[in-house]
Image 1 (tube, rainbow, N blue to C red):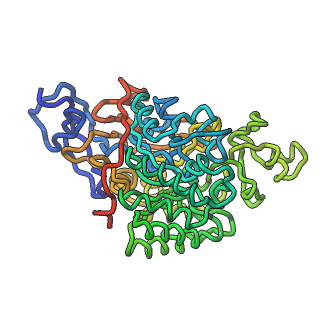
Image 2: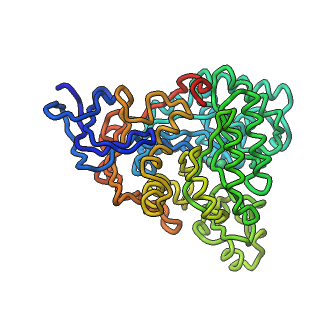
Image 3: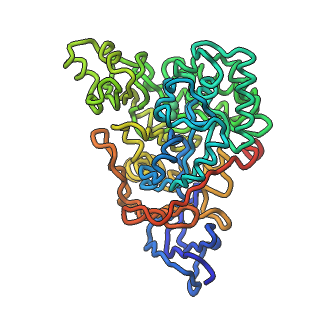
Amino acid sequence: MLYDLIIRDARVIDGSDTPEFRADVAIRDGRIQRIGHLDGVSASEEFNAAGRVLAPGFIDVHTHDDTVVIRKPQMLPKITQGVTTVIVGNCGISASPVTLAAAPPDPMNLLGPAEAFSYPRFSDYVAAVDNARPAVNVAALVGHTALRSNHLNDLFRTALPDEISAMRQQLRESLVSGALGLSTGLAYASAFSADTDEIKQLAEELTAFGAVYTTHLRSEFEPVLEAMDEAFAIGRHSKSPVVISHLKCAGAGNWGRSPQLLAKLEAAALDHPVGCDCYPYAASSSTLDLKQVTDAFRITITWSTQHPDQGGRDLKEIAAGWDVSLMDAARMLQPAGAVYYGMNEADVQRILQHPLSMIGSDGLPEDPFPHPRLWGAFPRVLGHYSRDKRLFPLHTAVHKMTGLTASRFGLHERGFIREGYWADLVLFDPQTVRDVAEFTAPQRPAEGIDAVWVNGHLSYTDGQPQGERQGRFLPRSGSLVAGFG
Ligand code: ZN
Ligand code: CU
């Protein structure tokens, strides 16, 4: 047989933000070999797309799947959405390189308990992923907070010169072993004390590799524009592309400012490669942060070590039940996780629509009662925002989760349906695709995702995982600086 597989009669959306075309797609040795009308051409297997949409497998640009790809390698929350690659290590927290002296500091605890961190070198993590062989491909950033936790005995101060050189050394080794770049989570107390200069010095390691700098900004509240300036200054200093994580206007006092944020992003993009990711919800989720406790909007608890039975409940109800203030209830729940209903829908839509934004879930796979973005982010963009709200055409939605992301992160031969590229593919029904996960029932697979192929192998169809898991570790494949305009 000439080919391993032909997917016939598909509406192909190829990831490049151009309209669909009708074609058959032939695959051999894990790669797309031919795209066209392949009547009379044979293959060992055929799959009838029956006029549904065939797109590149989605790339989840913003995840905290670092340890779950190893511990629960089926990756059901992602493969059921059509995701075929996850980027881990966001928001300054990564599973490697990490050597813990005690319990993981907040927010590294989002990645699991101390036992989950057993990768002192980045290369140990690469080996563990390849060994676990998750259902999806994995590419990884190195977290600034992770580096700090390795070398600082006190996270609430700026690093000293010898600590900075130790962190630089670890970052350099990780980049040599295939890390995509550096992430920070400067809003979190465990990194907030790092001054701009500390990060600039670390980012200097990115220059030689042409690697990316991603950042959960120092503030997403009132000082968000200043925080964006800081991110761009760091990127310009190290000549690194900058990706702002989950760009948003957080907090009621900040609503309606998305045009200002986007204008700043566009201005920076004139002379430097910058972009952002976002998730398609007006509620955020992280560890329960006392600084964010407010009665201006709803807050629900996703987990609590002291009071596990309160997961899924409103902070307000918990406080009333205990007859204490919101703040006291939050203190009593610590350590804990929360969903904050702290965004304005118009801002969310404006950011989603912007040509510089990519789609990431920011899902938290360890949470017993997670934000629904973990299971629903990608079908929600395709169904709710593209089809139902008509925010953008379907091919633009696909581009924001495939080609744009692969280009921004240098994921070589991924993110597009092109001859010679890896056959990471998703087949979905544009009429029925939708997110089913809700805040009250967050762990539910999407509808309308009909088949998913990873590296050329059918990995999900009929609502079930298929065959052997086919994901790989994807090392950084070259400098991002050239060709990133
Ligand atoms: Zn974050
Ligand atoms: Cu994050």
